[in-house]
Length: 240
Ligand code: ZN
Image (tube, rainbow, N blue to C red; front, side, top):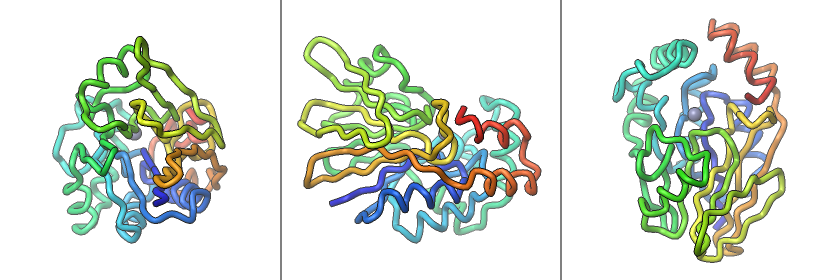
């Protein structure tokens, strides 16, 4: 089975569509949360994922957009965007978002947004945080998002290895335990503005990262029309 792995779409429909096209053909879509927030197309992105019967989890922005958590921990721009997103949601979109669990297990994979021990908020950036999290899930592999950075952590006997995947990087799933991040689809933060995603091939036993250009200007124009904060518009060009 070929599964498209998508995280942190953040209401950016052109980015989502570019990633999906690059990963096609696939049999399923799994998403690691933050479907909405920041970007101008929250409802369209939800509808696209509904149409693909995507499985996934909620991120902190999703939880805030449906009122499941407050926005006091968000910075000003993020709070303005999440409140704007909440106002756009249709009943159906809001129900779909509100029904996303904070973690789920699919076969050999645990799926969360932040980290297995703190699914909504913890950022998995460092080997020390990764090491502490390998005890917090039971499957061989864990899929995360939240940092908007493509990353893999592999548990070796005596240490945790960090892998920084680039476009085309392939990693074998060989039962050594891994924490995997497909990168940010709708708001990359590693200095590369191209949308990020990954393809899981369960029969080949591989995961392949992809970076794809998308029409950033189209998303920025829609953000300006929506009156979203300038800082959020500008950062898409920088991938930061
Ligand atoms: Zn996010």
